[in-house]
Amino acid sequence: MSRSDKLALLLSFIAIAAAYLVASRVFENIPHLEDEVAYVWQAKLMAAGKVTIPTPIEPKKFLIPFVVDYNGQRFGKYPLGWPALLAVGIKLGMREWVNPLLAGLAVWLTYVLGKKLMGEVVGGLAALLTVTSPFFLVNVGTLLSHALGLVLSLGFVLAWWGMVEKDEGEGMKDEAGRADEENRRKGEKEKRRDGEGMGWLAAVTAGLVLGVFAISRPFTAIGVAIPIGFHGLYLLIRGSLEVRKRVLVVGIIALVVSLLHLLWQYAATGDPLLNLYTLWWEYDKVGFGPGIGVGENGHTLRQAWINTKQSLRVGYSDLFGWPMISWLFLPFGVWAARRNRRMLVAGSIYVSLLVLYMGYWIGAWLFGPRYQFDGLYSLTLLSAAGMAWLAGWRSVPENRNSPPAESGLSPTDNWRKARAVGITALIAVLFLGNLIFYLPARLHSMYGLYEMTEARMAPFLTPEAQALVPAVIIVHGNRWTDYGTLLDLEDPFLASPFIFTFGDKSTFPAVLLETFPDRGVYHYYMDEEPFRFYTDRVPEFGP
Image 1: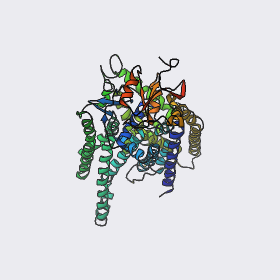
Image 2: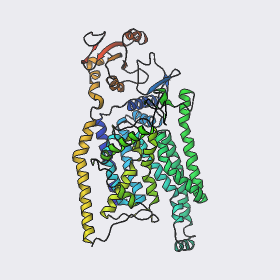
Image 3: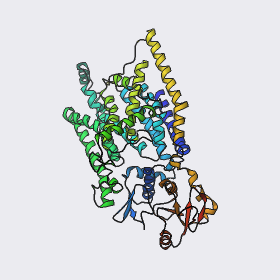
Image 4: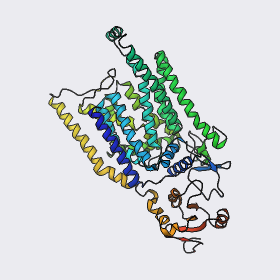
């Protein structure tokens, strides 16, 4: 293991620790978005060996955001890939560690990809940019699926280049290289056989990873696969017979695994092609025109452009914590990688996601442009390449057949030495500015999001509250978050010590008493009397 590898490994462990601190100190290891509540509900269900359960009595009273009731069954609208992994964390008692561990793996894979494409310097810089990115830390601290998507995206791209590396290398040899190869043919036969075996292993890995991606974040998986798909078409036309077979194997394996998503939809609804998102909001579709999105005329190109501009605007600062200039080194990175086809393909994945998500009617900005999070390495690698090129830091690719990144000019040139010192100082100032000012403020802004904090659950952990169990709690409030915070204390089977209901309560207590005869029924007013429970309505607190 080289010195650069050891530093990258250290950064990976730092990423795990930083992500865990964000998850525990900022988000308190509890859901805040409707998406997170649904993911956790699905994960709890899967941890118990189920993917659907019978619809409870009065299902609207036992509302779970983004969990739908259809044909007498209750299930989450999201694909099963991420809830399944989260369920493993729940079974092991390590739910809060799932995303931090994925964060560490993502940093390591970013380094490996950068090292393979443009050398150790670029790989190490990209890993450093990732682990200090506010955009990265905010998202890996949540219970959302983006950390898994980033790892799968990186794994797919790495496996893909591993699959085609030998074939591409042979195509780049010059005449002298071919003659030398002929002379060495016998001595290298065994080595070549091993290389072919690794190529097939990489092909199988790429297919499996893309398939798992498709059953975890299907729309995003399409965006990541598009640039690689164009390269695959090129290889089917121009590649060797061996690499054509591998490309087909990747596609076949990915298709077979992705069919599990349709099987899941069939098991839940009886219709493998039914879009489960539309069971919650019938307008929640991809595309343009009436009936898509909440606009009067549906989703339009104008709205798509507004959403995209807002995503870019948020990314200007959130990406690296450099207010309005986080894209500073990207143009130079594109220039530095202009002759490196593999790097340009990897760098285009973020653009592919940005364009693809123009077809989705709603944007995502609170956690940064998170719909493009799975392509984060496109920006970190290109930015790192731009830094290295400007500063003149030599970066030699691991693959000798890849064109080297430009390494600056002679160190004896005073101007270029001054440029290297200046760029290095600028980079240091930008990193320190983020770590001292932007990152702490950004993380602080996310604490207590929607007033959903661990303290909201504290009244139910007191000895007085525990003496009431098993109990049904009627939550009085005007916001779903008043109720949503407490759902982490409830299991999907409504068998936990406390179960919660929310909505019109005028005649509901009688129904609850009849349905749950072994439970007490209590009214709870979170804002007015957070540590008190009532057996009847209290006029001064509610109608």
